[in-house]
Image 1 (cartoon, one colour):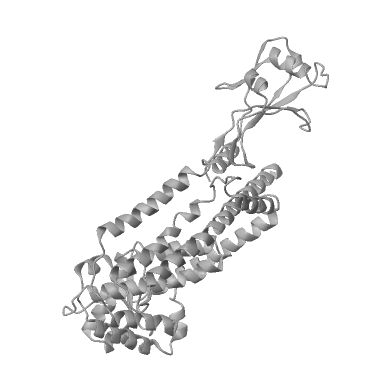
Image 2 (cartoon, one colour; image 1 turned 120 degrees about the vertical axis):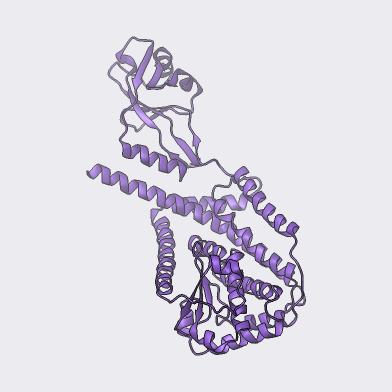
Length: 442
C-alpha cells in the first residue's frame, strides 16, 4: 500500500511538472504572438479610428484567432544555432520546473485556482439564468426564425444589461425593465445584437480566451487582450446589427445610450456578467465613444469568402508548421543499457556492440551471451560467475531530458554456458501500464 502511494505521488509530480513546463514555454511564445497581433490591430485601425469598414472589423476579430495554435507550441524543436537566446530561456525553465518541484507546483496551483474561479462563476451564473422565466415574444416582433429555433430568450427581473451565454444551449437574457420601456424596434435590435454573438461563434472565442487566461495567468498581456478582444467583437456585432437592416444607425446609437442610462447605478449587478457578451456593459468612456463613432460613420460593406478562407488557411498552416517543427508525442528508445546489480554503475549505454547483442522478442529479452561476455572482458573490472546485472530496455523520450517508461530484467551472464539466453519480461501491474500510457500521450 505504501509503495503504491509513493508511485501515485511520483506520477502526479511528474505530470504536474511536465504540464507546467509546456505551459511555461507556450507563455513565452504567447508574448511574441500578442505583440504581433497588437501591431497588426494598430495598423488596421488606421488614422480614422472612429470609423472602420466591415472588412477591417472582421479582420481585427479574426486576428485574435492567431493565438489558438500557440498552446500547442510547447514541444517545438529549438535550434541552438538559430535560436540561441530561446535555448537559454528553455534551459532555465527546465532546470527550475523539472529540477525544482516547488516552482512547477506553484504554477500549476495558480492555473488550477484561476480555472476553479472561472468555473464557479460560470456555474453560479448558469444556475441563476436557468431559474429565469422564458420570454414569449409578441407576434408583432420581427425576430429571425433561426433565433427562435436555436436560442432560448429569458426575462431578467434584475436591471442588468442584456447578454448572451451558453455554447451548446445558447440563451439571451433580457431585463424586464427594458422590455417594458423600449420599443419593439429597439428590442429587435438588442436580440439581433446578441444573436450575432451566438451565430458568429463569439461565445466559443470567449471560452477559448478564458482557457488562455488559465494557461498563461502570469502574462498580464493576455488579461488586457481579453478586454480588447471583447471590444472588437462588440464593434463587429454593432456593425452587423445595423447591416441586417432591422434597425437604422441613428436608432441603434440611441439604443446604446439609453441602455447605458438604464443600467446606470446597477454596477454591482452588471459586474457578475462582465465575462459574457453584453450589449452595453459599463466600460470605459473611450470604448463607448468608439462604438458611437463607428455607428455614426457606419459604412456598408461585405466580407468576402476569400478573406474568411485566407484566415482559416493561415490558422491551418500554423498548425501544420507547429506539427512539423515539434517533437513527436513520444520517441521510442530502441537502445539497451546494462547496469550493475546495485544500479550504481552504468556498464554499457548507447553502445552499438551491446545493442547488437540484445534483442526484444514477444515474450522477453534475448541475449547473445558469448558476445556480452567478450564485451565485459574488455572492461576494467573482473566479474565472477555470481555477478548479476540489470538490462534496461524500451522507454521513450518526450523532449530532450524528459522521458521514462521501459523495463528491466535481471541478467546473469556467467551462470550459464548457453550462447543464447532468453529472459522473460517482468509482469507489470495494470496501474503501471496505465501510468505509462498517460506519460506517453499526455
